Image 1 (cartoon, rainbow over the protein chains, first blue to last red):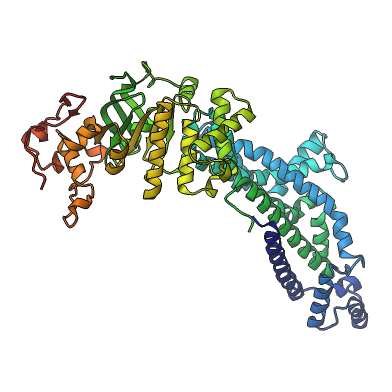
Image 2 (tube, each protein chain N blue to C red):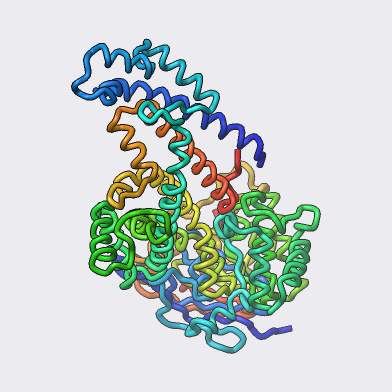
Length: 308
Length: 329
């Protein structure tokens, strides 16, 4: 297990990913209709005024020149300035990041806290009440859109029974309901993986050995089978976590949370090219980093995987 | 010196129930095992060998497999009805098992040391450090000594032979009186087979365990056994001490099995094979189950199942025509 080599390979892969992503996003947002200069100038502006704004934004330059200038600054870890607010994109992102990060983190924790015990129980007591309950739960979790769940949760726990604040942000209480609506759908996916993995592991030969050794059923199931079953569960949870970082847009709208999702959504509405580009590259980098962490965790759980 | 059997299986019948119906895999099997003895069960694939071993410790696949009737007596106590904690205390501590494919039967996610240590902590009430120390001793005893540091290795880091040694170390860790070895050498190549067999012989001598050795390989069986029983279609068809069985077999099936061993002295001759195959448990022929493959079969064999008869000196066979002259060619 050569960690340095593993790290280097991963770093190269990350760079290649980021290069591709930044190139694709650069051209895609310029292909779709819309012009940031028009957004700034408004509908009454004269063609001359629009030209002037384009010149200050730099969007009047040839596409190739814009592309190389953007790539050049990327190499210096500079995501550029927002076309609209003239603030560094990095600064805007970092301002919003903690909220989205805590939301995603809380969401995945809630998801795993529901899914793992219920999934294990479903697998251990197959075709019991708990198994059917778990199946019904995951069906519901996949079917129910999280924004709808978010609205219902708000109606119940912020309007009818005002335990949680209706809007605003800054405290843990503001995050519980959105995290719950996010975590519910994640739990549905993780539960199915947990159950399937656990059922599979319980049918493996080493379980017969564990029983033949005279281990208690508790040890057989919750030590020998569970550790192996956790391998796919960790992978899925990591992917789900990364997904939530970029995918909390709608939930942030529902709960009016000033997170990354809202920042990027505003950027798209306003055709804020640099903000969109920076946002996508940032999320891609975070996503890759999470996958990297998952791989390390994975190798700790599964000794057959070596970090290479 | 005649010793008391430590494990006696009497008229055991085991069935499997699947979606396509219920069928009997063991159809009244009887054998016993004495202390310090290696008793081999030989048979072709599908004859019921593995079920014979797994049902002893209540490890039949649940819920499909179940014991219909018969008794398994360990140290004078019927253990077929044991459940839960009573059964658990027997497993690993009194009767231990070694399986065919160590790479599948060892847990891939735990270090070898941990897989043995946990057993010692549970069965022998040892503290963690004591159990670890004992585990290292055990590993050394099976030839996986200090310098190989197998203790801290994961199963996938070991070769097949080392894995099987580790499996054996695990099995003997709590000083069981009975070791059930289900084809322990089948998955290994020939040189390793020999090492593992020597190890089992040595451990039998050192600890006085009774070993129930299950195999389809007559060469292996000859080199290790004190007693041999031949199993066919869920029944013992012949049982004798090794030397008697190999020199004067009575049952045609045994005779044919022996003739199917490749022998360097008969180089150039065509190797004998037994025509046909072991019948599926769901369509065992009436009468003697071996009669469709038996060159000696007569009308009687097709209708009447032969009783197991004793021929003295612990030699028994279940065939109507054991006295019939046998032509080897």
